[in-house]
Image (cartoon, rainbow, N blue to C red; front, side):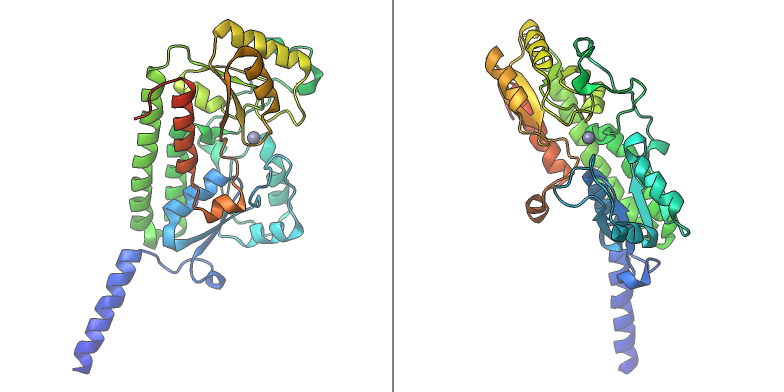
Length: 318
Ligand SMILES: [Zn+2]
């Protein structure tokens, strides 16, 4: 009888770990879970979706924080040193990370997205010339790769493969999670493509920063903005606003966009002058602690963006 009970218990335990699929290769101080740190919110959301029960993911940039003005604390640097995997975008705006990593005697395993995706150069609008508000070098590269769900598929493949290398016993689990997630990204990409096909005048005018370069490139939008990338930290100049008003009028656009990172005042002013609506698209850089509590995900943000775009371009929502 005892033997039967033992076999029964062993079977249950084996079955449970087969379902969970997690080995205990991770940090022993972390309940056997791999300790992952990411920079921006999308990388966090991808890592937790693919890593599931086998990982414990945190973001370097705290909830509600601005990734462009973030400065790590000594505690952050110790956390990076001690994690199992550190995931970041790379490029100029992540150069502080390279500085941190080169200062460490013991480096964590890293996953850098610029190893997988070529960054596009920031592009200036012609009307920007001479406006000192947003001086920038034309050689600067844009790091907001996650605004294209197609790029996110590449990012997620890289996360899946790296997790599988670090923790080969859970490889199947990571591959299963990644396959489910990839289907969702593929659908999001298709939904946006299908919407864009119905839009006559594919123009995005941002009275704001413009972190949607990869989105615009993926779906074939022409774009104009007050600042290239996230280069601007102040309100755009009157000259920039008046140029965007002229462009908006010449294209006859029905919406002027802004992002959640600003108060949208410039976009609202342009919209008011041109009879368009000012509408917010979420750039997904980060979310607030309330949004974390409410279970906001990359998908919920992008699906809201899709809905906003449908309304902005007056396409009937399905
Ligand atoms: Zn940005």
